[in-house]
Amino acid sequence: MNNKFTFGIIFIGALIGLVMVFAPLQTTHLGNAQLITAEKPKGGDFTLTAVDGEHSLSDYKGKLVLLYFGYTFCPDICPTNLGNLSVAYRNLSAEQKDKLQILFVSVDPERDTPQRLKQYADYFEASIVGLTGTPQTLMEIARRYGVVYARVDDPNNGTNYAVDHSAFTYVVDQNGLLQQQLPHATTPEQFIKIINQYLR
Picture 1 (tube, rainbow, N blue to C red):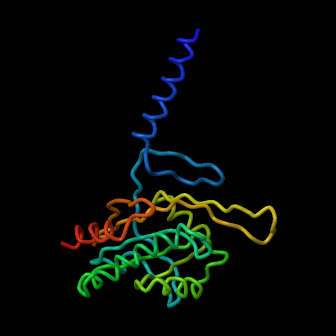
Picture 2 (tube, one colour):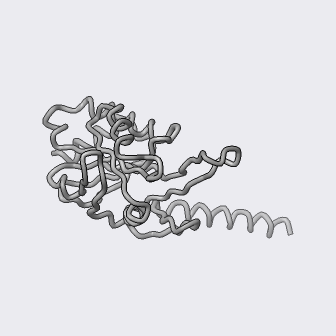
Picture 3 (cartoon, rainbow, N blue to C red):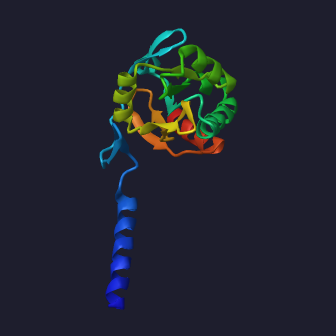
């Protein structure tokens, strides 16, 4: 009996391990459910609003784009990632900076106006463009990029909420193709290495 129990535990552990190894980094948010999929995110063009009007991903064709989804009220994850991107950016040459664009897409359209996004993005001094759109548009783009996010209301304050979100930085090449996603807390040195790899 004990042997069967032990075997069962080992089997379940191995199964979970296999799922974690082979399962995908991508998940898709569908309402309150999250669907794990083995499919690589498709990425693709989109049009959103910045403080100076509409911007499309295709506007940056010819540049390497680092794309990040988050929100300005984020207490730590977004500041960490954008801070690391900012340090990397400031260590690039002028020529490299000309060939790079960092886009910050808010998944909190209720609070993140274009004006607020600009103020927030400018804080990092990395020529970041802050973008927002309608909830429907943002959800459609998020699905294509495998972004997960969900509003979490504060039970102690009916007007306050957080937004849980995935924290990948998406690397879009000069042809607008999604090439890879970098994990949360990628260091400035790692960002520079990736940037150099695509700007050769």
